Length: 227
Length: 261
Image (cartoon, rainbow over all chains, first blue to last red; front, side, top):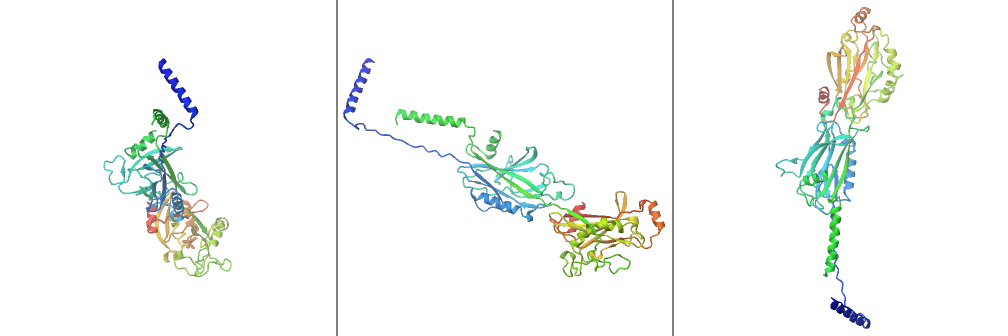
């Protein structure tokens, strides 16, 4: 080891001598690469219209579509009475940059569900456990939930296939919401569900989750819900 | 690549892996909500009574009260009657005139005219229905006359025949209908046309209540004894109005079939 130390010491001296007499005598190089990773973005738009929507709407357009629908919905000609339905076609567009599974959830007050509030569903939709799911874009599930102390029936539609970026759901799972003819008469009290201005609110939500890493939409959302 | 660089890159990857494994939102998600606010229409009517017969019918009928149009001029001019009059072309009392009179009908008119009836006296009783709801509605007015009195006692009371003959209303009579322990004969007038939101029926289906000219004191005592008049000789003629949304029904008959179901 003593010998090695000596050799290293001598070499260091030589270098020092050379360095002191010649400027810029070292050839150097630096090689770099930049690894730019693109982070996926999950972003969807949820909007409604009063008829089937013919094309994809992006993030800039969707709010305007919703506003126009709400304006249409508030017209007196679209006032709900017993036995009357009002058109409601909900869609989701994928405005992010990665494939996503999507679902729509609709909240109907429990006292009105399946009795007084009616909604027309697209043909072919089956439950999430149905054996044959070939002929539908959406799968349906429903359950009772409580939100802020109020009971609702949550009706969920899962889109079977992921939505690709810039893709929009093609078939609206529902096409209208209405009131059953059974509300006509004095024995049905809607006052607990309708405010003093006669407004009945039915909320809907659309969720999206990356499709990567999940086999099906139902599994993806079940995983998320359980978290 | 030098060993040092390899180690450095490996170090960066290690840090990245640690960051990812420590993150709680490992899955990218998004959520959007919308609120669908539906306006639910309501059916709401006011039943009002006035001493004004819409077209002042009975003016020429001997022994009946009517209004001197020089004192109570009719503001509705000939040929200006609304469509639901079904062809009325003469003068008429307007909605505003009728509503104004209705405001004091009970206190100023009926309290006096309806007290201490004597044989041959009649009391103007013209019912109208105003649609104060938000949707068009089919309307029906039912006049219930105590069955025991619906003969010579009150049998000369008059409904508005033109309201029926013009086709504006249909009349269905049901005898011996029990209500709250009293038996009535019911005259149900169904308006053929929906009454639009904010509007009032054109025709008053009833005109007056008249005590028969030949009613005797003995008959009154007998009615009292049998409980058809109160001890102070009062009786009630009921007027009730029904309404049902017109939307979704082909006609008033179908609508009230649902109503009565």
